[in-house]
Length: 354
Image (cartoon, rainbow, N blue to C red; front, side, top):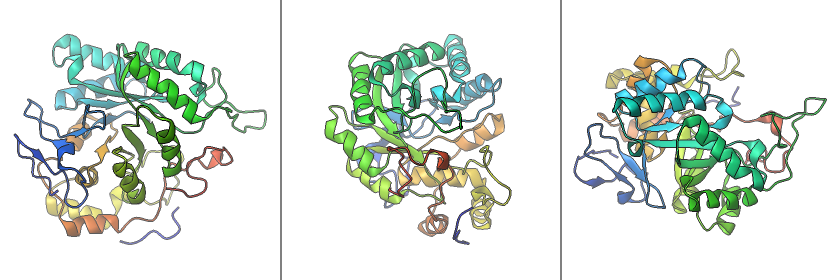
């Protein structure tokens, strides 16, 4: 799949002090802190001052019928950050899991950080608020902690999530995401969301948003793993006080379009060797890698053991040499390239921009 795949923080979590979250990556020591709570999880301090747990439960491709229990398990384990999106078509199940744990008394709403995303068919400015309200209804919440523009590419509005013409070609929206952003800001002012951000935006697209923003993006959620480390984009975002949220940190081996023979980062011998030396799983190594970079990370799972395992990443550190080995797999290996969307005027990857 990848043309030339290469063969191959120190996070001292002192429980009462603000720490530098990474060795060589963190720009600001105040960005991460260890919170003395029953379930202590480092939190990113966003540009607007809000706190966002550094690890969350991802829900992309989580099978219907399994999401409620996955969310309940995650909250029991200690997750306080749940990442969802309207297009995942499982927000009602996420909401049911959250509601159950709140009613049970396990958590309060204010203990949780819930993210969702505005889908591409709702970029038209007059649709933004109703799309957000629909997500809130599905989640049974009064507000979101973070709402993202899912992609910079708008699709034709309507009932279809992926509208196409008679030839199967995606129907685009003429709306510009900078106009969508202005409506996102109104959601903050009206109390529907606490913070706003973007997802899958490249450097130039973020600069266009910043040029019109009265509320700058809090985060840019992007694909990020050793095959695609996103170093240039991360450096740019952090220079603008925008955090990086890493999706597909384990390489999304179950993505529907994966082909036999595609590289699998979890199966790379060098990764497995680091894991064996640390007495950890390959998944834990990859999640820890993102945390030591200062990135927020949202591994997906519906399996109880794996949800628990993915959370146990705060009791060890990767050495500089181990990080160098992990980053040796960088090959601009994008696993979610949206090749079928090439031609959209706002496609973030078509021109290989970072």
